Length: 120
Image 1 (cartoon, rainbow, N blue to C red):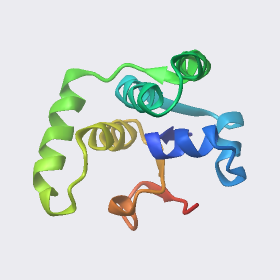
Image 2: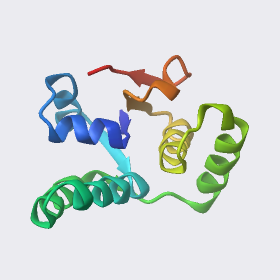
Image 3: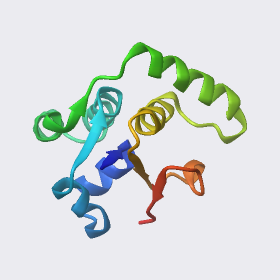
Image 4: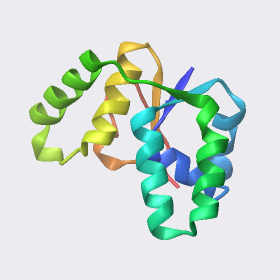
C-alpha cells in the first residue's frame, strides 16, 4: 500500500502517467495532505475545481492521530536543514507508522527509508 503526498496528488491532477497507477492501486492520503492539496487548489485554480478534486480524493483520506502529529514535529525538528514542511512530515510519519510506502517527488525525501521517490 501507498501513502501519497501533495506532490503526488498534483501529479495525478496534471495527469502524469507515472502517478496514475496510485489512484488505481491501494493508496491513502492523510487529512493533512488533503487539506494542503485543497488549499493550494483554491489558490491556483477555481474553487469548483478544488471542490471536485477534494471530493474525488476524500475516500482515500485517513485521519492522523495526535501521536503521529507529535512524531512529525520531532521528525521536522530533527531534519531542519532539509526544510521539510510540516504537512509532508505528517504524511511521511503516517506512512512509516502504518508500514506504507510514502510516494513523493519532493527532493527532501529522496533516498529516505520507506519512500517511493518518483521524478516528473
